[in-house]
Image 1 (tube, rainbow, N blue to C red):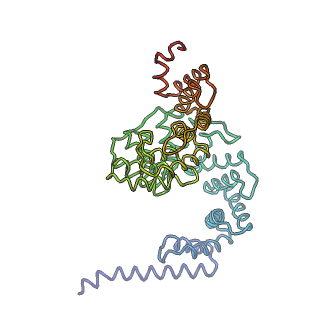
Image 2: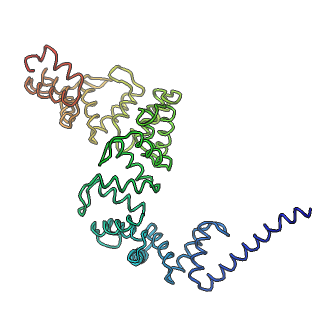
Length: 414
């Protein structure tokens, strides 16, 4: 018993000391000590000596900030920037960002750059934004480094020309500090050989994975694709399915599509046509319809295999075509041309749909348009126009067009 008491005594003493120190801190804060108010705010944020309470934390940071405590001013300014409730709060946030940025605070410099970039309580000014992002980035601020990387990568800011090599440098600096977006874009640079880096799929996969593990949906999609195609990693269908699913849960359209593909074909998961159809229906009913999703949902409708009601699918294809998807325009033309699925055959409508898609360099549509001109379907017969569109289709990769072009039928035009 004596040993137990001796063992517990230091713990009890620490607990009393812990409580006393918090009471002392609270007393100082209540008496107007700016440093104590700031420290008390930190306690509530971290749950140190007291239960976490963001409302209490903000209250004490605000009191400390009003007395000129710079660290508190920064925290309050960032809160006002992210959750503005009044114009006065916006003005105060900008005022404190300017004050602290001029004192050399890297975080304040980053936020001041954002203010100028997006016109937050000031006129948009990419020159000022670039200036403050650069000052912050040179002090090692990962968010500012990422912003500069984006500016150099796109060249959309008037003050800085496109410079992918510099973008890679900034992305790398930010990525090494754990910035998920920078890690993703650095992965893209290695995957495509952007800037002064050589294509290195293993490094690309490494950075995609680091980003994906932080929950970035598009990085999770990239990791899944690497596993599916063996790009910088082994081919692993189960891992591909896992990452497609994680990304799809965040609403990534491409991952939703590929998840449906996995269920439809039993790739990395037990085959389930029902789950595949449900996923494809979710995508197809969205504002922007993905034509690949529709084709996947329909199965190979050109072989009279259809996973779902064709009439409903036909309406989805029409909506997708009307929204500008070139593949859907081609699919619509094919259905009209062949009179498929109970739709009346209509060469005029087919020619019109093929034409829209062909001028957008859809290779199958160019091939089909060539046939329309050759046989006079939906348009006056014109062999020269047929040859011209057949050449376009070949140039854009149509295998059917290449076979026809190399046949005896077109020998005299080669």
